[in-house]
Length: 242
Ligand SMILES: [Zn+2]
Image (cartoon, rainbow, N blue to C red; front, side, top):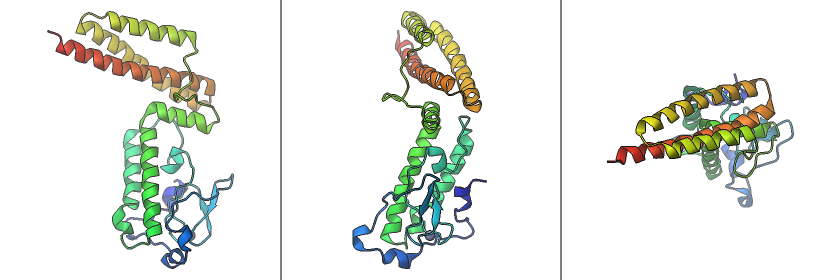
């Protein structure tokens, strides 16, 4: 089981305990704060409350149980999930709601303002990680970035692959020329198969650590998902046609 989730207070233990006395002793210039503190290359940081070691992705200190400020971690670490492309949505949802429960404002009602500020910042961080992992393109980009593959500003490497480019142009052209909803549906059926294949190939590329294939397939998936939007728009057009 992952370390970050192991350090979460259990449902039975009820309240999340922080070292309130230490928090209150923080000079006003430093509190309340959810600022990011130094993390060693091994991902170890110091608890703001007891100064004991915590892992960068831990929500709570294992020693004093104080809530920990969000430190710069990848979205998988943030949600205490194994970094992989295949992501069952029910598993992702379960983890997200578990973490949200641990950080629920009710649990921090009697805490210091610093702890409340930290819990809010953590919640925002968890929401962002959840949003990233829900989207297969963003999830793939996160995995590539974790492996040091630089991603262009538009979120994906440019469509430099001539085969991909040609395929994309042909699909767009076919959609532009479609005259009936049956034609649109047949283009949609092909695109849906291609997307399913692309998702499967991406999982395989990440599984075998073939980063150049993963990079190319991420670009293809991004295109295929954009094309899905165009198909939706085309469907609306035909449904409104007399
Ligand atoms: Zn601590």
